[in-house]
Amino acid sequence: MFCSNAGLVREGDEAAPDGEWAVNWSVHLMSHVYAARAVVKKMAERGSGYLVNTASAAGLLTSIPSASYAVTKHAAVAFAEWLAITYGDRGVKVSVLCPQAVNTAMIQGRERGSASTDGIIEPEELAECVIRTMDEEKFLILPHPQVLEYMRRKTADYDRWLTGMRRLRTKLKGE
Image (cartoon, rainbow, N blue to C red):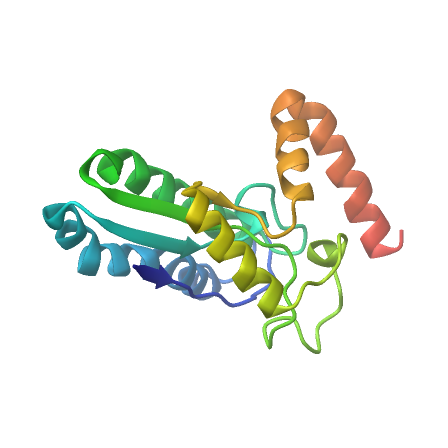
């Protein structure tokens, strides 16, 4: 088993400097690519292994304050999907961890935004969810179960979901 976990928060929109986009890309996507290069082929050769990539609920939904975070977390989820499709028949299990807010140094001292809408969980809760979901060999690890319902709403009616996200953005900004 290998857990690939890297993340940082850099807020910014389309005008954020290229360097900020590059940092997000390197940490949120390429760290998983490097991990896969190191372990997945060996797992496939022996016919067993488990790779857990940490993305974020932002990779399934979005991140209101940061375009670069949302885009690169979406890429991390897509890469995990590709790994699961490509290596699943060769004994390699892949899961992607997509939490909202977790009480770690990453969120401490920061303004509570959309990720904390459904509450901030403790790392121990997250770990229990990871272990339980791995035992079930499910792809999506969702410590905040509401994320699955949000995904269903998003895919059922994208335009309505976008309208709702605009309302949430306005609410969070206090407009």
